[in-house]
Structures are given as structure tokens and as C-alpha cells.
Image (tube, rainbow, N blue to C red; front, side, top):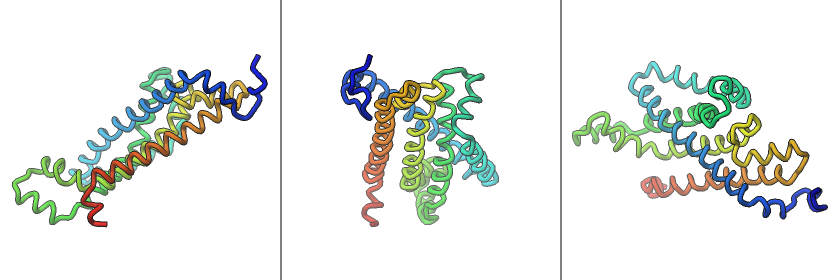
Length: 221
């Protein structure tokens, strides 16, 4: 039997009693998010390089990422389960796929936005195509890239929450699923609140990171 306070909208003592579980779910949520965004960013860089090097591939790559993004998340999770089963891999395949729409176009747009005079100056210093990309073009594209990372990360935090509905971890989303199944509002409120806090927190981290990583943009403003 639950105490009378359990019938309230939010029972703080329940959170205190389960603080270890809360901590573990927050860590799990962050880990799943960072894996997805990290792997997605690596794949997006490769796809962007291909799109920039072979211009005819840009439209098919962009369309493919757009098609994947239009697939409802629960549907994609469900389709993958028979193939990779109820594992972290199943969740991460879907999560990584969803990051690409936000990352690839921003990386490509950022690189294309680098002034030609800057490229010419890099060539004049003896830089090859590869060195110019990593040392000049990619850093100057940082504002666009950070914008894509911010959107991809916040979106992924929400999708990790949804993955709990098909028993794929789900981080703090597991509280929402648990509360829904038991008709118990406290874990639902907790899960929703933690999801929002994580999304806002990571968004602020990227804003600060962009501010620190692009001093030339601050001087320009």
C-alpha cells in the first residue's frame, strides 16, 4: 500500500526514495543521446564531404535523410526490433538516423558559406584540399555546425524518451512509461520534467560552446 501522499499529483518522497534509480536513468539518457549525436556527427561529416566533393550526390543524400526523418519514431523502432532485437543498438540506429537531417545540411551550408577569398588564401599557403577542409573550412563553418548539433541533440533527447515505450532503455522516459502503466502521476511528472531540463541544459551548453569556440564571430558582432 502506498501512503496517502502517493495520491497527490507529485509525491516528492517517492523521488527521494528512488534517487539512485533517478540518477541511473539520467546517466543512461545522456549516454544514449551523446552516442547518437557523436556517431551521427561522424557519419554526417563523411556524407557532407561526399556531397561537397561530388555535387550530384548532394540532393540524393539530403532527400534520403529527409525520408528517414519523416518515418514516425515508434514505427522505426518497431521495424528494427525483429532485426536487432531489444538492444541498445536498435535504439541507436534509429536515433543516429534522425540526427542526419539536422547535421548534414548544416555542415554542407556552413562549408559552402566559407568565402572564396579565404579558400584562395589557404591554397596560397600551400594547403591541400584535405588540410584546407579540416583546418580552415570546417572551423569557419562552426556556427552553422553548432546550430545543427543543438537541434539534433535536443531532438534526440526527446526521441530517447520515446524509445522507452518499446522497452529500448529510454532513460528518464522509463519513468513516464512506468507511471502510465500504473496510473501513477509522480513518475510521469518526473520523467517529463527531467526531459525538459536535459533538453534546455544541453541547448545552453551548445550556446556556450559556440560562444567559446568562435571568438571571431563575437568580434564581428
